[in-house]
Amino acid sequence: MISELYSGPILDAAAGIPPARRLTAPDASARKVSRVCGSEVEVDVKMADGVVVDFGMTARACALGQAAASLVAQNIIGATAEELLVLRDQMRAMLKEEGPAPVGERWRDLAALETVRDYPQRHASTMLVFEAVADCLHQIGKKQPRDNP
Image (cartoon, rainbow, N blue to C red; front, side, top):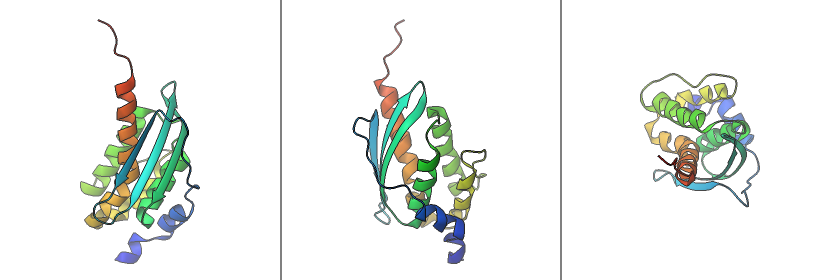
């Protein structure tokens, strides 16, 4: 039922999205757009010592995209690249393969998005922020100097 899709926790997360903010000197930036609904998320990531130390984002998205972006923005500082790539994969599995919702102190609120699994046309907008962050992490990884043999 569509009312389950727009539950209180999802609407609360969407309403709690931090103000739009872009970083002036990010390590990487990425923009993702849903071809289905036109939702758009742009993120900037700054990392130091293997963890996210600053995050900027603008989200022009539906309630589901905003809810996901909000929960990521509120919890991303201090996360490692590996943790965030695993999170992206967990979210994809939760939506597309009936996998479990992410757990743990930092990401447990993402379980509110579990109801999106029954609405495949909404998966892309929900995944935008996770894909944008992963894109940034891959960019940063490509910037790392290679070890000399």
